[in-house]
Length: 183
Ligand SMILES: [Zn+2]
Image (cartoon, rainbow, N blue to C red):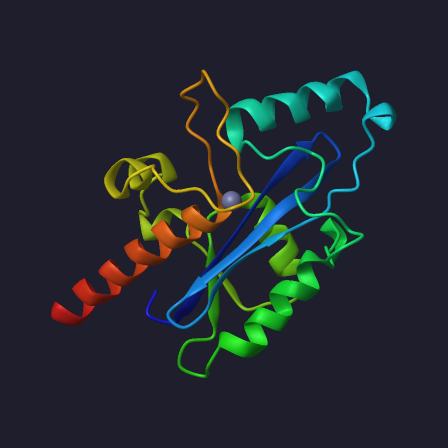
């Protein structure tokens, strides 16, 4: 765990046959960023099941609409298929020989990290006994969302933001590393 230099997370739409990213975040000691992703979803092309997954994700899971917040006419927005190369770029900037690992707690993101040969650590491996994200959210608070989210009126759905999640996990990792130093 003391070889972790950053935590990465993403949120998006998990369809039965594929995952489509909507935001991608990294938090390290020096750099933190949340990148919006254009999921390129056309409503009329989605199946009934995919539509219900999109609606559920937007209202209950992460709160992100399937249309980009920023317009591609005015700013560069990467596609979901480009998430691996963005993380590679972040890894080149952040990783060191002593701390080469990007940590994650996200099955879908794990596949992207492994596909792109990015040195990483899966915090869901039982040996780490890492807390559930819901427990971290309870402990560290639930009041922050990145600029890409809009909290829906009239619902107290607890939305998951990739940026906040990565920050909470990074905080917990640091506390554990400190404890290891004391012991
Ligand atoms: Zn967010």
